[in-house]
Length: 528
Figure: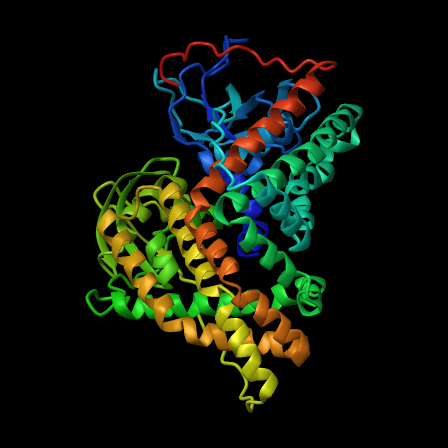
């Protein structure tokens, strides 16, 4: 069903949002171990919260465990860390030490500490705490219309592929944990065993919740007829071919998203100049260090990226003796109105110029920060003569609720966009984007239906398509699809709460025989 398919496609990214482990980079310093230890670093760059989220080890994430690791590094004259080691890791053996070590090259400090002493040849200790968000309260389930409706809803859940689909969903965190390097150790194996214990219980809870919500939406009579239609041979064939059907429909959906992005760009560029022009044609400086592709992508203007609009910004910066940039100012950006200048200023601290590129004190260094856009194109389907099976497949596609799924996808996109905004895009531009995407989907929908009809015509016989159309045309199925679209926030919250319960059970089981404690937070030293 649409909700199951939607959750299955997006479980990885959604669950990352649900249970995104937020690592707190205190960048505080432990008690000095020697006179050469830097106690007041002036950090010019630290890892972003998103970078640390990506490195949160999968085993403790599935266990719901907080973690702690301490980096000990030597510091070069430029403020770059090197020869790092991890003297402390808690809990031991679950991957927090490796995660912290991977962050070392994302720290950089000013060549002089806040107290004026040079950092060259010194050492620094950086405690890193990996924290989890607070538990999400589980939303109350609605009251079913009758006990008989619950029984019929359970039959429907077993028939429509929800059971198998959601088993795959919940198994995702287990699979990621099993693939982690720490899983090969004795501690990791014990953790995997604890994670396995709760999966069947979690699946049962999720399926029972699904049945309860269905039974609150449909009457017993509606469910009985829907179950009857779901048992037709053609619908059984649809379930058996689900992986092929989904693969074909996913291509059609991606094509629709591309068409919608192009349409939205056309609409927005009617009122804004989206043409990129270069004013600074001078040769770029020689860089010793530059922002990574991941950092450029993270800080690039999101609206421009969705629309496929490339841009750049010209900056003028002072250069320190060690090549780092300071006191940067924006001199030009193109196209204007998409916040490329803000993005470039946010990236400036991650550049370091070679000594030969350092200008005189009287003349600032000029640089152009480029933000290339993804090439957005639409695949045109091959010409195909109509026949009786294709005509029937068009009816199936029109009744399949795909417009609801696509609008759910747009809702998910907007939700993710609003919760990952980095402050570069302004609210008015975001509102324009959302409006343009909605209008673009309306215009692109007929092409999507046609592509989906071709998928069905290629996979099923005329008799099977007739059964599928009967099932799709059932008013109860339409009613349920609309309810699912309206309940996405409920399912997001329910899945988040269920995941929190799962990891809490995992944690209790594992910590019965393992030390799960982490050092207490210490007061932040001055200048950290």
